[in-house]
Length: 456
Image (cartoon, rainbow, N blue to C red):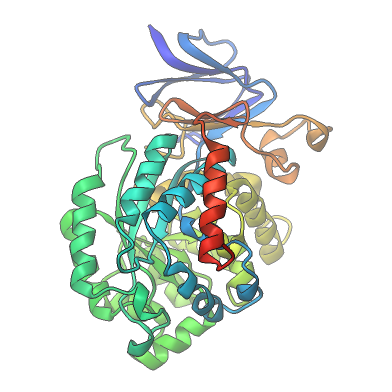
């Protein structure tokens, strides 16, 4: 039998399967978008229509990004918003983002997804919660870019319904009423959501945060997600200001409000979750609420706290990795997020507080669990999605790293993907995007970014 793709010659294949096998000299075969065989040097290799060489590489499942705002790469490192608290950062940028349209959403997604692929990401979510009046169908524009590039995509239909006049943060121009939000959410699920195994596009519903939507919208969104059988996503416990806002607006802590509006379930995954107390960690874990750990963004605009990653995992919460929006983190490399998670784990808990294998598990199986795709993504096992990355552990940066390729992957570097494979198709091959047109897209992106920032 001839397989469609064979990845051969790896220094090590870290499978992240049920037995956590690590196979020196391993190989992976993929057909029809799924893994068909994983073997070692003594196992007979199948014939293959295409072979990707992986000498000197650590091969891992593709990394899964659980939180992003891709459109924000149009305002990277925007000087007026730098070194600000979360609330001031948002109020500075909301008026700029009010200029988003379909072209901006498509081009920013094309660039952002390409950046993720080059950094070893094979599946990403996106939380697009700014929907300006007359901006068009921004989510469909993003999905178009993902399909062109061949990326597996979990966009979320974000929303804001409370403007400044209602006691929220955003201006009127980027908020919508509850009925409009819910109707469009249902439309997008009907048009794009694929619940099947190996799906390339799934939709989740994602009111932005407790301080930008009504409690009623949170409740009705949870009810709609239950009826449509899709997942829920929002920001939660990201900044100390959030609890102060919740105390004033709702008379309770933000996680108490999250529970009251019907979101405390394993259908939900939340971004950041830096400030839960011990009792809240236990409640989140018992309910199976997933958490997107965003270490770089948490340090840059998260109020100075460190997310209790170890405690959340121990309590039962799936914890994945997220790069967050490009305007807060200013990059979209999951390798860099993984390394930062490793360092932050050591800072918080000491030398044994976090290992590279722990972080690799966050970025693969943990992230897959947040998206409701356990066993399907984030693992190299027969029947799982054929998504993987070949990481070159060669050159000056890895000289002398001879005994543990997984630890070397994060302790050394920096490193980008040699090959990124999604559903058995190379999206990055030999360090280059497979899809043509990058330079033209960069020119278009610069023009749009200059317009939005008032520089064009």
